[in-house]
Image 1 (cartoon, rainbow, N blue to C red):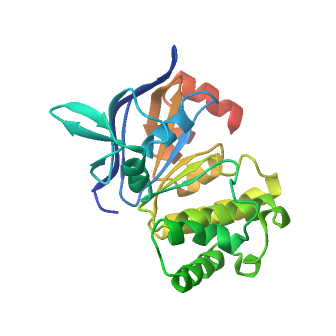
Image 2: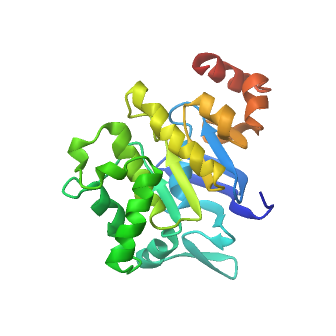
Length: 255
């Protein structure tokens, strides 16, 4: 793992009306690092994730991915929000996998995967299909290329969603509770794909309740509550010996 930073959040704040969801969040993720964000519902984890690829705009602070300011252009210390088209161009390099699989129901697994490379990257169709088949094999679904989402289990749909995100060759992958909508017996197959990605050096930020995954795979663990980072560090250390009372209380309920 090199020391270059892939994600740099500097005093990031975000409110929805009078509700302050993020309160001056500062953290960094190195290239090749896997960071897990944990905490109770409503602690700001998913909002922070959505700010990283500018699905949500920030009210204050700076977010950089691979050294580039996300969602804004800075002129003389004043931020100007990028036009939607410019923001979308930035977003191409950041893959995102949601709780709900968000697959196009009228498209097969393969068609879902090749849609963005064809439309956004203007990739030749033969090349997109070849890459799509490679990705389906990578997530263990080589035999499901022609299946529609309705004919796939939740775990299979989520693995197609991961393959779809990877099809754009992202430098960073964001996972927003990717297993929370799955039946318990299907969780493992999705986590196995994510573990393999981590082994291959993909930089990942994962909002999750899967503490076993965090302990085994993550390089860093961040516990958020009430819009702030309460505690962070080595996952095994934080999970075994949390220093903050709020962390202890949360972990006592989930471990």
